[in-house]
Amino acid sequence: MKKLSLLLLAAVFSLSIYSCRETTEEKTEDAMESAADDMEDAADEAGNEIEAAGENAETELEEEVNGTDDVNADDDM
Image (cartoon, rainbow, N blue to C red; front, side):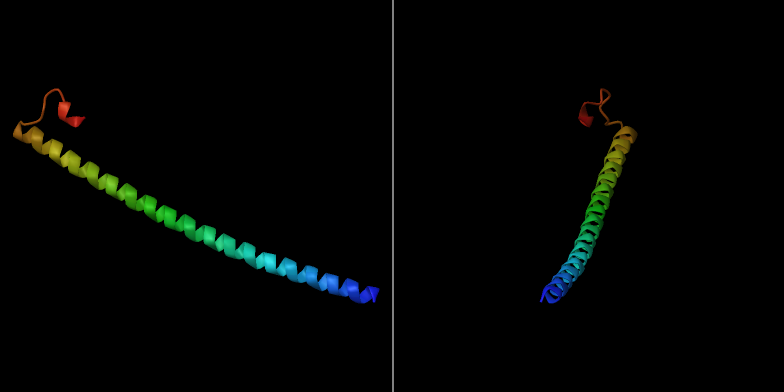
């Protein structure tokens, strides 16, 4: 009976290790997907900021060319 109990204990232990390994893999995959989503969001945000800066630069250039730019740069604030 003692050997049977030890065998059963070893089987349960093996199954618990196996199930933890799958959980760790799933958590790792979830973390990787989350990181990829975060990087995509950051890239979109950076793109939007670059686009806004380009539009601002275009407006400033037009003001310089048309002579309507504020000399003291008060409109930049």
